[in-house]
Length: 165
Image 1: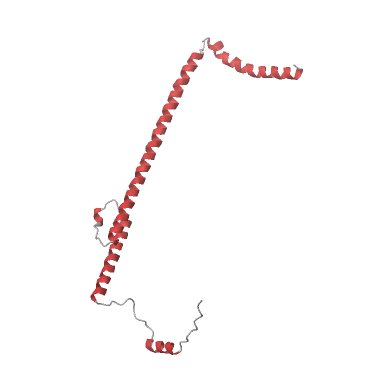
Image 2: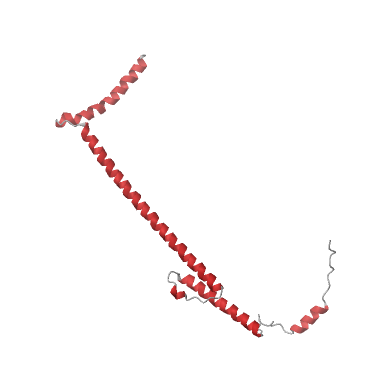
């Protein structure tokens, strides 16, 4: 060994010695002999406590996940009921919306509007079948509508049709 390595080895020993002195200081001051077995028995107790805490945290996480899944399933069921009611209403069936407490107010309003639209459509079809003509829109408010139409017909230019093929 060269002197540099020897000096490093001595420095390491000196650095570790104060810790050794502190380990033995309790025994020197109090006169009690601290056995390493006491330390070993404390560690398993701490490990058991830590493990118990981890188990409790895992159970809490699991219960929160289960609750979230249950809420998600409930939301899916509500959406399925809503879609089923929409389908039934579009087929012309009249559905009592008050019987479905799981629907929100917005959903009930949408379904009510859909029922009214289907009823209006059915009554329009009945009127068409019976021969009654209900005008689709209001008449034009232009003055002299027939006169303008006649002028338009006179000045209309036929456009040439390009040859096909």
